[in-house]
Amino acid sequence: MMNIHENCDFSPMKEQIKGQLRKMIDDISAIVDKLDDNDGGCMLSSLEQVQRKFSRVQSAAGAFYLNCYLSPYTSKYNELSTALLHLSERKIGALIVVEREEPLDAIIRHGIPIGAAVSHALLESIFYPGNPLHDGAVWVKGDTIVTASNVLPLSSSSVDKQKFGTRHRAALGLSERSDALVLVVSEETGAASLALDGHVYPVILH
Image (cartoon, rainbow, N blue to C red):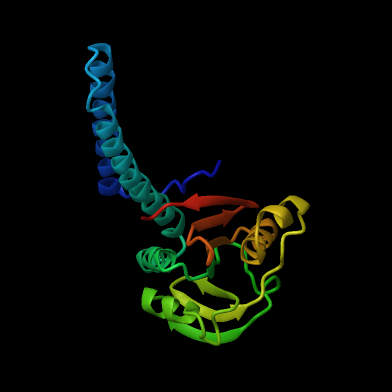
């Protein structure tokens, strides 16, 4: 299990999630009471509403945790979160490396220099299908996109080979060799993930 950086503080977002969870608990309790009263006629409709609310909570929690992990290392965490959301919605494959404490120069096979400020529009354009730079990883250091079309070391785990495609194995490979945080979007499913310390975690943003 990952530990959130001790300086992470997104209190309004945290309170929003807590409020949504408490409301869901009340809704579920009301459904249970209806069953106890043999009045379950609207139970399926009520469960569907709870499911929709849970999806919204998952989305809010995904944004909360992603921002917590990114904010100590870049002030552009909102730009990165927005890019990840838009790429995920459009099922555009992406691989974004965020350098943390350990330098990555000796691990990443450098691609094309960018040297531009991080923005969701630039990230989305880089990974847009057909763009010459879309195949490979973007390397973010602080608030700057250092290079694009980088090659990352693949995970050598046989389990990873069976379970993940090349993009996810590259994210895992780098996270096994450094403390980098790697954001991944699957072009097949649009699912967003976060690789850290040799593990992949789903990030639900929509």
